[in-house]
Length: 311
Image (cartoon, rainbow, N blue to C red; front, side):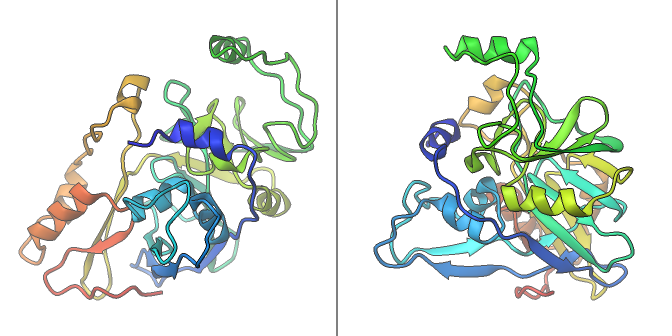
C-alpha cells in the first residue's frame, strides 16, 4: 500500500495549473451532472498522477478512487485514466458554498445563476478535522494573508522534528497561499504553497484550494455568503426518468489509527440510503458492487439503467 503522506513529500515542490469544472444545473428533480472522461497517458510520460488531476480540475483522492492500481508517482505510458467528471450533487440546498468533506469537493452556486462550480479541496488531517455538519457564512476575505500558528500546531510540528515560527508573513511561502476566505470564527478557505495537498488530508482543519481556484472564489464570493459543510460519503439519486444512481466515496477516518489502517472504513448506511437502494427496480448486485468498489463515480443501480453518462 502506498501511503499518501509519503507521496505528498515527493510532490511537495511540484505545481501545475488547475482547471475548475463548471456544470450547468440539471432540471428540477435531477441531481446527476456531467459525464466521465477518459484520457490516455502519452508516450514517454514523465508526469505524476497529480499533474493529470490538476489539468482536469480533480483532487488527488478523486483520481485514485476512479483509477485503482494506477501508479501515482509515474503512470505508465498508454494507461487509460478515468477523469471522474460525472457526479451527483449533494442532497442539500443549492445556495452559496457547499463543502462535502467526504468527497473533498467544494460546490459553489453563483447567485441568480444556472451553473455550479465544483472545485477539489484539501482538508484537515485525522485528529485535526475540518468541521462537518455545520452551517456558517463568509465573515471576511483577506488578500495576502499572514499565518499565526496555534501553540498546538507548533507542538505537532515539533513532534516531527520541525520548527514552526510563531508568525508566517504573507507571500509565496505562506501555507495559506495568496488569498483567504474566512468562514465562522476559526476556519478559512485558502490557497496553498504546495498543490500536492489538494485531495488529501494535510491541513490543520482549514480547506485548501489550488491557486487558480482560490483566486476565482476570492473574486466572486461576497462576504455574507452562506457556507455549509457536510459529510456525505454516499450519495444517491432517483432521476426524472426513473433511473437510480449511487456514488460512493471512502468515508473519512475519525482518528489516526483508523487513518493508517489498510482496512476500509465502514460505510454509514442511513435509513434514507437504504430506502433508495432497495425496491423491485433496484439491482442488489449493482448496489453491492458499488458499495464495495467505492469508485467515487455515479453508478446506475436500476435493472434497466442506462450505462452512459449524461449532462
